[in-house]
Length: 175
Image 1 (cartoon, rainbow, N blue to C red):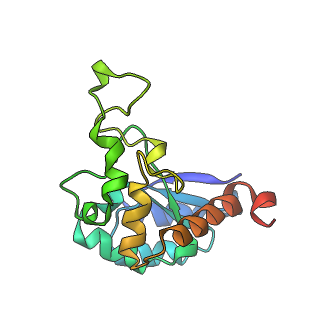
Image 2: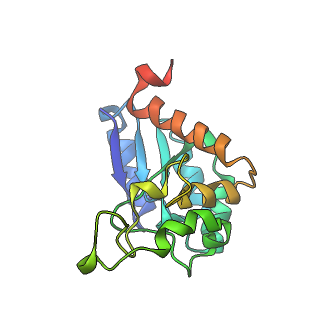
Image 3: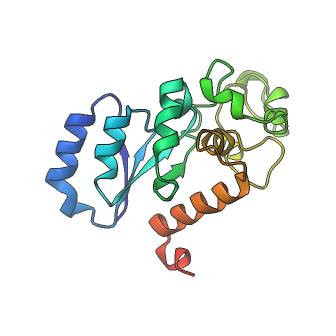
């Protein structure tokens, strides 16, 4: 069984636990909402069965973007952590988000006034990842592509989609 592993400000302890229990998840796992330093990323990537899950919380600061820039694309997965961790206007990664990807969030409504035709304000919805959408967009994807200095957002999307298939649906990922 693959694992979804939450790491928040505890890389040393986390890696000790992973080392002690790696035999219990030989198929791998995702380090959810990764927002650690470059050294933490290097130590996590030394574990071949782990991938880094990125969302808006992973893209807040210039340091975060520098870490994302150094991650191998084949070890990245995208997340929403819905309803949290959207790409906020104050985040360093926001500069990589296109106007088209922001268009959907412009009409977002407060959760108390929600309607099915729009997103909930300040909620990171799965639609904020999908490659094919112009509205409401692909904010997390665009920030990761921009941080990796890739002008081909579609190629980044395909690579990350392949990573997800390989991790969670290996029969489909090998096709």
